[in-house]
Length: 240
Ligand SMILES: [Zn+2]
Ligand SMILES: [Zn+2]
Ligand SMILES: [Zn+2]
Image 1 (cartoon, rainbow, N blue to C red):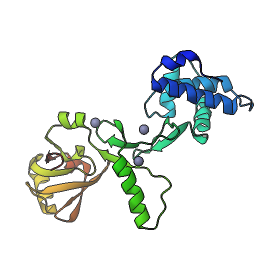
Image 2 (image 1 turned 180 degrees about the horizontal axis):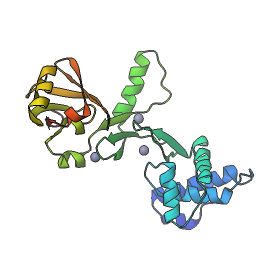
Image 3 (image 1 turned 90 degrees about the vertical axis):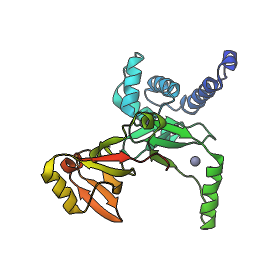
Image 4 (image 1 turned 180 degrees about the vertical axis):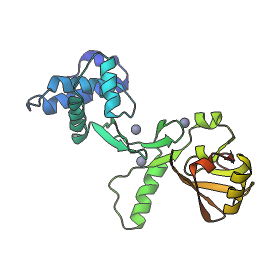
């Protein structure tokens, strides 16, 4: 399919997406793919979003645009997009499978906020070449890579309370023990573990319902959820 003239006055992104759609049509038009028209509708909506979306989010998005499709059709479409390089499958630390556009010849990496889940795309040419150089110094020929940086986004940093219970801290955070709440019993249990106010701790793991494992003074401490709620910690200034 040739691009129509009116596409030329659209934004570069819109033009790129029109081209992607044309590629897709050319590849599959005469292949007897079942539900081809529905799959094209999925492609339209998928190309419209610049997000990293899960298949259920895409199903919802389609529904909000008045296109109600069988989940299996949407999943099938996403499989097709992925297998033929129109979409890229991402699996970040939370284990959910997300999809994003995969434009030929374009590459970017991701920063993922552990507080609000925001995904920030970035590209740094220095970082790109350093990765290839490091690989080469090991005699390793890099074909591709994935770079994910986990942390706290600028918005969340701004809104974050400086003092919070240890149970709310995220993996990798470095904090100072500010105070113990919850009465003498809890205080004694914490002290007997060897932790005291003013100690610096780093979160090794923390799951929503499980225990918090911290490192302090080069030792690991496993702290139950209930106890972790009674330990108030102060976040250290970012990047200090
Ligand atoms: Zn990269
Ligand atoms: Zn955030
Ligand atoms: Zn991305």
